[in-house]
Length: 332
Image (cartoon, rainbow, N blue to C red):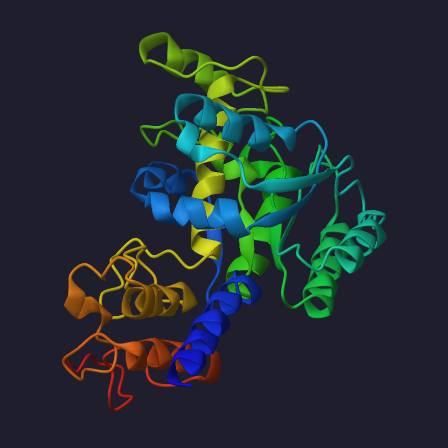
């Protein structure tokens, strides 16, 4: 009887990983040029979680394909970075308040409840847009978020067009940026990534060809590719790294170790840590390293009660790991 109860607990924990594979977040996630060097810090376990659990709807045309090319370039360097699943819809966000992408998105999401991330690119549509047109885009994204609360929607800026900081593109991109920052959205800042070389030098007057990339690669070793549409391979490569950083943040990764409760060492505390502990306790899986990190309820041991503590914290708002009195401080 006890063994049957234990088995049911373990199966429920495993099922929870699938049901809640994309955690909620309470602040904006901005993938820009500063995200690129942080790619190297992402634990392989986080990459593997994304590969296993992410189902991405991506509406894009040629400029948006630069991200896909960048992902492929990274994979060609290291096979550990195989792309997560994408469904690519062959259109983009259009021009001047176009909303044809909205019903197409709804159709896909309605028939694919497993989809948990949806992202959309521009192909020149920001350069000539208006404040009203961008507001239509932002409001439609918000409507989709409300209709599909289990899907993370990724906003995007438009590619550089040579207009610089006085141009309409810069103003409209800032409209998108400010909205995302002020409303805790996820933004892939396409234009910002194009605006900085790896040394941090700023090129706001460049265009989508990434002219600074040629100068940079003349004196640095740069990755190659078959074709980075409209641009230089380095531009695609940097966007691929920013994509992985963004996905890691969506899936709950923090750059600092999570500490207590982070049983699987992926720098975040979520239901997968409860599964790790249950697997260790019941079926002889790997122990948390160090073992003390699995003692989420401060009782001096790592057992199933720690898995229950983490589940209670994640799903019903219980105290955090090692926070016995709920004051936000660790007690062991």
